[in-house]
Amino acid sequence: MNVIKKYFYQSLGLFCVGMAYVGFVTPGIPFSIFLVIAAWAFAKSSPRLHAWLYNHPWFGEFLTNWTTKKVFPTKGKYFMIIVMSSTLAFTWFTTGNVKAVLYSGIFMALVAIWAWRYPGSLEEYNRRVMNKERIAWLR
Picture 1 (cartoon, one colour):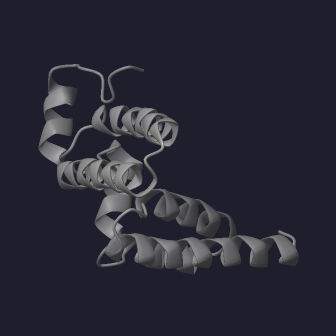
Picture 2 (picture 1 turned 30 degrees about the horizontal axis):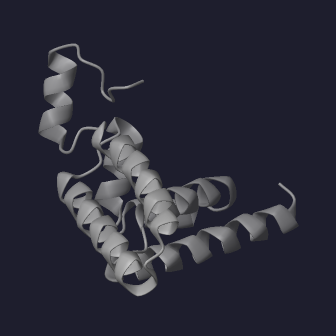
């Protein structure tokens, strides 16, 4: 691999891990998408950093469950809905802009639908597999 590409992917991965840390502690900033991008970037550039990310105490279980079984934790889904709702309320009360609230709400609803179609736990995943159901509905 080209050295410039390797360092680009490593830099992108480290940036995304930093954003995931920020998103983990800051309401309104997602952490999951940054983790997925970081895992992809590290897979292309550094097996050591890729392994570190998958063994991380905060992010490892989420990434492993998402990668292997497409499990999106139910707690994360509820937290996402709370953050989205509070963001919409904040937008309405600070701007009063109906269009901004409407468009943001539609986008947030689509993201919520996307997230809720995946199993929320390993037990739910196993139940869907046993019953020969789709892992993610609306597919």
